[in-house]
Amino acid sequence: MRGSILRMNTADLGLPVDVPSTALFTDQYELTMLQAALKAGTGGRRSVFEVFTRRLPEGRRYGVVAGTGRVLDAVENFRFDAGVLGFLRERNIVDEATLQWLSGYRFSGDIWGYPEGEVYFPGSPILRVEGSFAECVLLETVILSILNHDSAIAAAASRMSSAAGDRPLIEMGARRTHELAAVAASRAAYVGGFATTSDLAAGFRYGIPTVGTSAHAFTLLHDSERDAFRAQVDSLGRGTTLLVDTYDVTEAVRMAVEIAGPELGAVRIDSGDLLLVAHRVRQQLDELGATETKIVVTSDLDEYAIASLRAAPVDAYGVGTQLVTGSGHPTCSMVYKLVARAHSADPKAPLEPVAKKSLGAKSSVGGRKWAARRTDEYGVAEAEVVGTGAVPADLVDRQLLVELVKGGQVVAREPLDAVRDRHAAARAGLPLSATQLSRGEAVIPTEYL
Image (tube, rainbow, N blue to C red; front, side, top):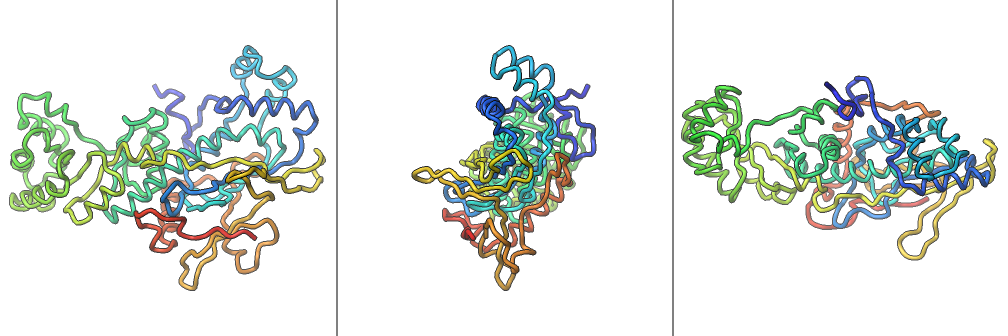
């Protein structure tokens, strides 16, 4: 039976959505702010919130927008049903007047944002949420939770994909993170350039191609490695991938080709000096006539290890832990800040810029913003331009924000493959230094107008 957890976010596949409310994916102070604003009469003021990051993770040259599709699902399902309202009432978190307001909550505003898969830089207004203060403030935590996680994974995946070149990457980190985070990570990795996932929930929910054959336990189960290989080939066919480093790699490769023949699909190496072992295995396979048999390597790979294997005869990489933890940067430090608001609840009241003016690095820039990417004569990005006034004529056609939600209705759903292709194109439009793995600053500056 398909449970509601596995049916969550199925819109990408055109399947029915049967999702528990996302309304409690929030912090309590969102609701206490709401109560106070409603009581003060300010909750209905038209407001603009923006998602941005003040800096990229240390050493990163660009960020990747990922999770937008999941944000749209979360906004659609942000509903205070009887169970949620009962919980809030039991805990005395907000008063009855606020509970009554929440019972009819439906986001009715507008959301604009960078299209998913696009790259971003410090100060980029990645998402802009517009509506009353009351309805917009409630979405802060769930939006940040999704974008911070998914964008971090996608950025790591993008770096790994760049390092791998045209060799495919397999996402296999489900056992290294929370079971639901694993599904989101698979999706973000696919956006960033990974080709497949081992996680069946991700395949079911998002249509990502899935792969997988056997682990060391399968070999150890059998009385001999030969028995294990024979059982796998008999079950999965000669095109399967045999794991050859349980005992002696050289003997295992010889046995694998003997059992499966030169039609053997691939061998997987999961330990040792991968560069050295891959060369030896490739030579042995070729000598045995298995010239088309691929070599897949795994074992705690990150973008640096993948780059170091560029000269090795490796055909594919399997990545787990380092991917689902953002390769050292599991969050993007995105924030959700009020940047403009009206003086009254009158829908015609003009917006006025507001901004936090803290000491140090936590100040922000007020005003409802647009963003565009200026390119040079060769079409290569040279600056991220962010402004609050009129858009310069030469940047009108280079604006980055697109409409995602209009009047509370999602207007920008798209297939995940389109998002993946967009990221590949966006990364290709950056200066070549963007793909360097050495530490550095953002590959292009952010300019404010």
